[in-house]
Amino acid sequence: MRCLMCGKNRDEGTFRDLFDPQDPLCEKCRSEWRRKHIRFRLGGVTAESSYVYNEAFSRCLIQFKELNDEALRDVFLYEVADRLRFRYRGYTLCLLPSSEEKSAARGFSHLRLMFACLKMPMIEPFRKVTSQDQKNLNREERLAMQDAIILKDGVQLPEKILLCDDTITTGATMLGALAALGQKAQKVRIYAVSANIRWL
Amino acid sequence: MMQCPRCLNTDKAFFYRGSRGWYCRKCISFGRVMLEEENEPVSLAPVSEGSEEYTLQYPLTKAQEEIAVKCAELIDTSDVLLHCVCGAGKTELVVLSIAKMLKEKKKVCFAIPRRQVVLELRERLAGYFPKAKVVAVCGGHTEETDGDLIVCTTHQLYRYYRVFDLLILDEPDAFPFRGSEVLHGIAETSRKGHMICLSATPDQELLRKEREGSLIRLVLNRRPHGHPLPVPQIKVVPDKVMFLSLIRWLHRHRAQSCMVFVPSIKKAQYLYWFLFLLFPCCLCTSHTENRDEVIRAFREKKNGVMLCTTVMERGLTIENVQVCVYQADSRIFDEAGLVQMAGRVGRVFAYPEGDVLFLCRRRSEKAERCVKALREANLCAV
Image 1 (tube, rainbow over the protein chains, first blue to last red):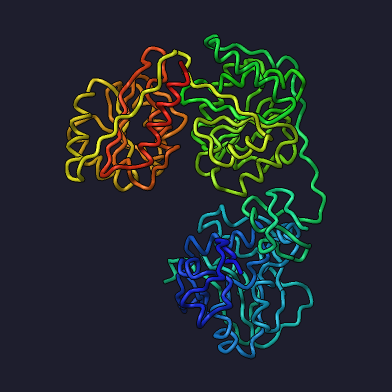
Image 2 (image 1 turned 180 degrees about the horizontal axis):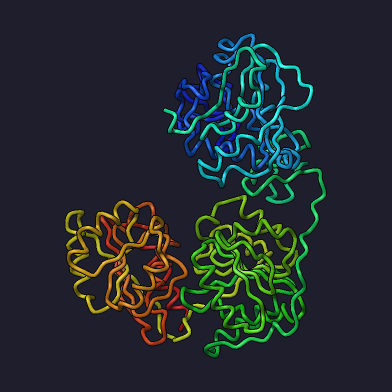
């Protein structure tokens, strides 16, 4: 078995493998991620994230999202899956949208693959109307884009909703999704796998 | 058996079956390549008329001429390794072969592991081929990827699947190309014709290919000015005295430019803090952002001291420069690197000789092998 990021052969095994032999990342790659469960308020809703968005995490996320490396699907939630399943039992995962062109080019929904390992009910009720890439925008421009997310027509929303995304930078996408939900959902929580360091 | 069409990987552990089928994860950083889908060779614009005309700055010497003609003959039938000492004018040697290919309207690429050298080489080749469109493709210069003659880093070769009729690989023993299976595979699949490798220090892989007969080696052991290569002087000094020896050596050469190679960036910085009190110093490592500017200033100053790491060991020509390698026994340096560092000296016609000093903490086999290799080259040249 090889580490999915550095490609190093791991048949030899390490001390950690005695307790945790299934992790798709090797000890070294995993240790570069900074795991930190934080909770904060975003738009009046409780948000939670598990990792700090640092260089190693972003490298992995880019390889998964931009270079379409589907093999990395289980890497992100491997350590926190049990915890999430327990904390958010009864919730329905509600995935935030990518722009349509991008997901068409990708050929798969990266969030659906990423959160599939939780084995929880999943819906994708949103649609993104602009296709502008957020990467090159600054904070003000991002916050101005909140209206870009709308609910699809005729979507039935469950009672308890967990809004899921891969990373929270400014929170603009999340606020957009919250605005699109309005009063239609009874209970909403937010979960992002990683959060920018400024949320700490 | 499955094989990646781009990096030629056959290790099953690197293949993964995604939603659209199997793909290779070894070269994923260059974008995803599906195994089952047919990869079309990239098509580029044809070579423009008259681009093969060339003018050299200096005429080739007799020895160079001989090698250049032989090389141009051989590339039709086989791969060639030009094993030439540092400063023998490797670029000029292949100009004839390039011109021949361009005349036959074939695509030629000049690939180099280091980005720094790409831009410099583009200027030189554009000077040699005034009518051809010479494009440089490397990090930061990727808007235009097609021309009559393409100069690129070895990383950029992934853009050209089965394109080139002639691939010239400069310094294949340099980092990051050396030892990288992915880059080797990509270089292999970017060509449909033959390949010329230019190296002063060919590695075992290339020599093995020569023994197998898939590669023909041409040797040139003399620099165009006919002077022998400067042979390094090895000096074994205790740790604490080494710094003083360095200062003494720098003081002796205070009228000339000196390059001091240091094993690591941190050490270079510390040494810089001390030395800049005594000498006009500059620092040039991979962390230096305005590297081009630093080098330009160093060139103009004529009596400066440049502290550098192994990034600067190749492809740099500076007039009247002396070289010292600080802690030459460090495991960071290898034999090929030491030969290259010594090869910075005496590359210009006006200053064909110079001083090279290796400061070691203890006897070092690598340094001794390097000296031996240079001595042998000098002997063979006569």
